[in-house]
Every structure is written in structure tokens, then in C-alpha cells.
Amino acid sequence: MRKYLLRFVAFTILLISGIAPALSQTTSNNGIILKIVSDSTKIVSGYPIALSVSIANHSSLPFCFVDPRMPETFFACNSGGPSLTRYGRSIIGTLLVPGSHPTLPTNIVGPGKSTVWGIPFPLTRLYDLSLPSTYQIRLQTQRDIYLVNGTSQIYISIGNNIAIAKAIGKRLYLPSFGENLQQPQFIADGIAESNSLLLTILPPAGQPPVSALIPAQVMLSPISGSVPGGVSMSFITASGNNSFPTLLWVYLYAGKTPIQIRLTGDPMIDFHDTKVDGPDGINGDELIEKPEPHYGPIPNWESVPLTAYGEWMSKQKMPKDLTWKTYVLEPNMIYKYAIPINLGCQFDMSMSGKYHIRLSLVNSTISSAWTDIFIPGVEEQKR
Image (tube, rainbow, N blue to C red):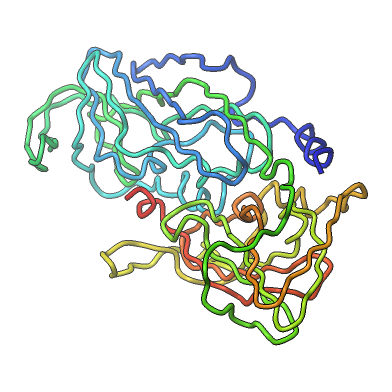
């Protein structure tokens, strides 16, 4: 098994923004510099990665921008490298259609000052970084930063006061995605770029555990679909509904007679025939009223596409040097698969909404019932 994983690790090296010195600081004609950092630079495939974005104003003018929600509508990775996820394709570049009027900015960074963008940039919800490799990340603003000649009134947030009017003159401005900046006083002044950040994506599974199955230490309600003399399989999410990625703990239950099954301890092999259906994310959004008004994808269903890692896995032959073990499921005992199944590394589940999932054990007729799980939206995940 270890050989199988190591063969994959050496398979590919991908870069998002081409060859460049790691952690280099870029310069900008407009004087606005972005800095990105990650809590960790080594992450298991399928797990979330969010980047903290800081904005440094090296110009002699104040820099203004709107309320820093949804950083994915303001920033994007430099071109090249891994493809966008389904959520990324719905966000990056698609919302930059000019509207009818400017949005009043609510944040000001003075000359020589810096600030942290209010919400982290959800990198792995937007880009497919599932293939184990070393990636070089560099963010840039999706739109030009504008030099604004003229005085106007803007609204800023100070403490609990949300709308404080302030007159401001010549400035630099990062527009929101829907603004029409064709007025003469708005002069495009180029994008702002960040430093480079190296991220290492690790394989989704390490050395298999000593035992693939362990007696469950919790009492569960009867598993749906169990039949006398047979085996039923069920699962629960490992980290609750309000999280990403999707990790599943699997439970097996035997009926009135002992059942033998053969496993490797590697969930990518033992549950190779996993089925996932979910929202297609193609036909736009709709307004959802509860729990509070927000937009979500229209719930049309299709088989969820594979990630880059899932595509690679689907083309690989079963290794001949696998170590299989036989396990006996004793009657009326509930067994837990030793490690959770990481669906995020195989399936593009970046769109929010309800997903239907079914697991099947390799070399058997044992399958779980179709079960629904919920993937929260990016905004819900941040609460």
C-alpha cells in the first residue's frame, strides 16, 4: 500500500502561477500590495485551505474598497495550473459584469497603512488542488485598481456605527464586481498582486491502520436496510453539517449470522465504487428565504464530477501487491471503519446544497442506502 501511494506522489508537479521565487514580494505601479498567508503549508488532499489576505497601501493616496465579504469576487489566482472547481467557475470572472452605478466604498486604508481582508479567501472551494503536489499560489485582484480624480462622499464603518459619511478626494479604489466605472474621473491603474506562497498537498491516505474495522464505541440506532443473515452499512459525517470537506465515518452491522468480508484498510480501495449525486450548479442561483434571505444554487441533480485526483484514481489498475485481511462481523455487533472516508479528494463537492451518497464495499454486494448530506455555502461555513 505504501508503494502504491508513493508512486502517485511522484506522479506530477503542478504550479498555479508558473515558476517564480517562493514568497517573493511583487511590486505594483499603483502602490497596492497584497500579502497572502496560510495556517498550514502542508494539507491533506480534499481538506480545506483558506488564505488570509492583507492589503498594504504603499501609495501617497488613500485606498478605498467596499465591504470585504466574499473575497472570491475580488481576487483570483494567476492564470495557469489547476482548473477551477464548479463553485470557482460560478464565481471567478463571471460576476464582473458592469452595473449601472458605483457602489459606495466602506473601507479606507491610509497611505503607508495596511489592513487584513475581513474574510479568508476559500482557495480549495474555488480551485482543484486535489492532486498531491507542490503548488505555487499568487493572488491578484480580478479588476483593475482605479485612480479616482474628484471628491465624493463615501460610507465607512467605525465601531458599531455602520454608515458614517465622509467626503474624500483623490484616491485609489478597488471596485466591486457590479460597478460601472466609465466616468471620466475613474482611470484604470492596473491590478494588485500578492507574494508567492508554496503549498504542499499530501496524499489523502497514509499507511493503512493495523485493523480496518474496530468495534464501535457508541450506540447507534438500528442501521436502515439491515436484514437477518445479511450485512448493512451506514455512515455519518465526521465533522457535522457545517463543515468542509466531507469526511464520512462508516459503520457495518451483521444480522443473525457471522459474515466474512475482505478489506485492505485503504478507503480509496475498499470503497472504490462510491456514488455521489448533487446539485449541478449550472442553472444559476435562486433566492432562499430561510433561515435568512440568501442566494443558493438551483437544486438540479446530476452525478457529481470527479476531481483531478478522482480522475487519476479512476484510470489506475488495482495494485497487485495489496495486503487483504479477512474480518468476521459477529452478530448484533456494530463495527466502525478505522479511518474516515475523504470524499472531497475524489469528488467536486464545492457547490453548496444537498448531496445523495451511496457507498459500496469492494468485492461484495454490500452497499449503504442512499443518504443525504448537506454541504454549506461559503458564507455559512464562515459563521
